[in-house]
Image (cartoon, each protein chain N blue to C red):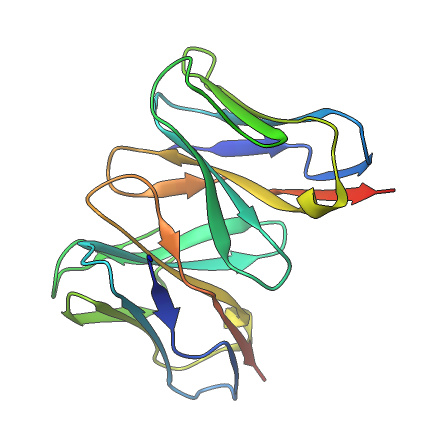
Length: 110
Length: 111
């Protein structure tokens, strides 16, 4: 059974700092997705990673995938308040189903 | 623009009531999904459907049923709501594989 673990579960960081969120998964997969969720809102797609070594960047966020290590990272550069949200990774089992991590709640303060 | 619409954003129901949550997508996607989201547990898959009139159980189907009579519409049914079904329910769809598109969510409270 595929398990997806994120850490940390909660991250409080100061504006301007860098940090990385980790997503580990337990079985082989080469497709991973990152989503963002604002409080009271639904999930919005951030990144789609479809192969080993894939790296995607959008603004201050950069996601990467290492399928051999079964690890994806979401790196935050020079955080700003607008990045405060909950971030989920989701792994594709090649069965049309995605298995989600428990989420990382990010809070950026001045 | 991609659109997944859930009919009710907030519902309050009593224990034992029958509850319908409706979801409509306008993207001609084959696959549709119902997840529930609870604090600390992430998103858990209840049911999904890969075609009209087809359905598959997800990880937590107990206490739920679904209906997909038309390609664009996927309904989640709670036959007899219970307090432990108080949750946020998220509908999503995708095309064969990959990236999911989510609706705004339906927050259900069962008293």
